[in-house]
Picture 1 (cartoon, rainbow, N blue to C red):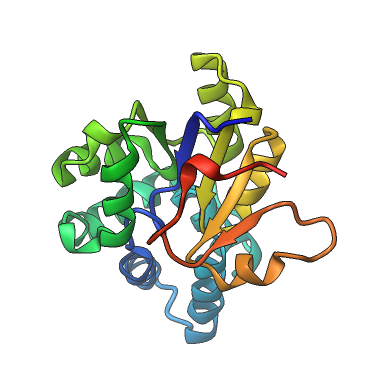
Picture 2 (picture 1 turned 30 degrees about the horizontal axis):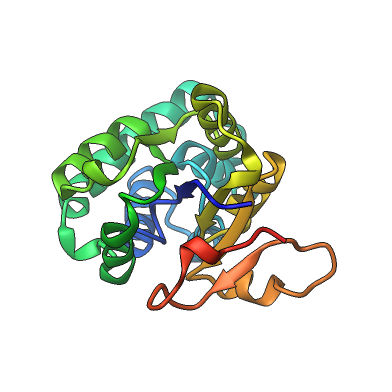
Length: 222
């Protein structure tokens, strides 16, 4: 069955700001008195392994799982806003765009329906995509909240798509699990973790090293 709709993850696929965001989280936590290097290093490992997860969830994880302390939802929300302010200035830079991916999108967006499905804060994502000049390539740009599985489910419901004719392209296990939960085929990219999962028992995703020469039209969901 031919593919009609492609859902693109944003950060780590179209745009690369993982390092910038890691530094932003570190600055945020240090500002609020959390300067223990071991704790910050634990969070750094978690951050890079946890694409497709919102900043609110990551902040909650830092306090609950690393610091082993409780934190009110109101405080999480406030810290998430503060984090956005910390990274805002450096985030708006076209240098973070993945030129290989953008060349592919530019070549194929008129022949397929593209959406962005991202864990990046929705309001920030909209403004950033407009600044980057890439809105024209996508039927919609969807960020968080909600979480990634619900974002995909909402797109399917809103546009009455057939999941068997869809593909999710992402760089994290969360992207894969979110696609699988919605019965959408998955293509991993830019992730050693996802590359190593291919061929393992139970894993249903595929992996792409490079978009150069990739034939989306002939991609078949097995």
